[in-house]
Length: 163
Image (cartoon, helix red, strand yellow):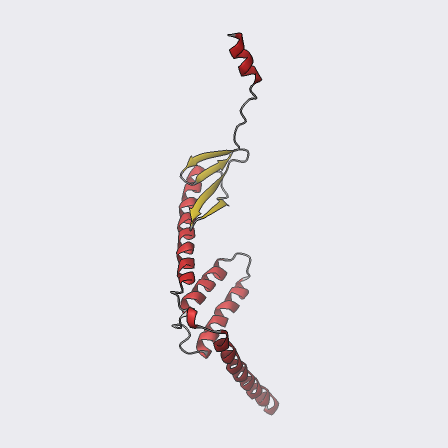
């Protein structure tokens, strides 16, 4: 009997984990009480803070995050498989810029106007397959676009000098 007690005394006490699994894909960091999501989407593990220590709020944010990650993976699959048009690609770009909290509202509007002007100056681009768009196509368009912008600027400057 004493052998059992001495064996138990020799074992170091088991260290408590700082992470506690509280649900599917939901973990709580014990020292702070903040909830985190651990989601595997597209073969990649994403760990993100849910910025809350309230379980019900964490569950709601987890569902939103899972949906967003799965949609992002689906979109990336479309892009890598080449089943996407330039219009769809620029719509994704615009969505990301709109969701970027680090950008000022005027910067977001700038990107929106830029995309509109590209589509306006390049008819048929929206439906164009991304896989078929070449660097040469872009260089040709840029040359035409630059020429048209210069023509507009010359017209404005000549009107200013007349007025």
